[in-house]
Amino acid sequence: MRINGKFAPGFPHRQTHGLCRTRAYSIWADMKKRCSNPKHAFWMYYGGKGISVCQKWQRFEGFFEDMGQPPEGLSLDRIDGSLGYYPENCRWATAQEQSRNRSNRRVVRALGNELSVVEWAEKLGINESTIRARLNKGWSDHDAVTKALKVVKPFSEWDRK
Image: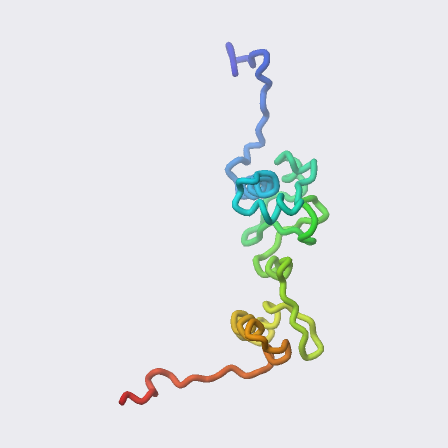
C-alpha cells in the first residue's frame, strides 16, 4: 500500500519478476499446486505420493533461474518419476519423451529387445493401441509385436446381397 508515493509501514514492497503471464509461470504454479494442494485434480499422483518441490523452487525466481522459459512444444518432466521437483531431476521434454518415462510404462520383451509399447509401435509402424489390445487379451509379448495385422476388404468390395 502506498501513501504519498511511499510504501506504508507494515506493507513491504513486493518486487515482481514481470513473468506472471508466461508459460513458465503457469507450469511452475501448476507444479506447486499438484504437490501441495489436496484439492488439485492430480494431487493424489504427486503430493499424495510424497512428490515435493525443492526449497529453491518454492519461489518462481528460483525455478526460472534453473529452468528458464520452456522451449516451444516441450513441458516439464521429472527424469525419475519417483523423485520430486528439483534441478537435477527435471528437464524440458516432448510428450513422446514423457510417455516413455511414465510409471505405468509397459515394457515388451521380444526379438532380443526390451522396448516400451510406444517404442515398439514407432519401430513397427503400427498403432500402439493395437499392441496394448493384444497384450490385454493375453497375447505373449512376442506375438503382440510380430503377428501380422488382419487385412479387411474395403467396404466397397463387400457383397451387397
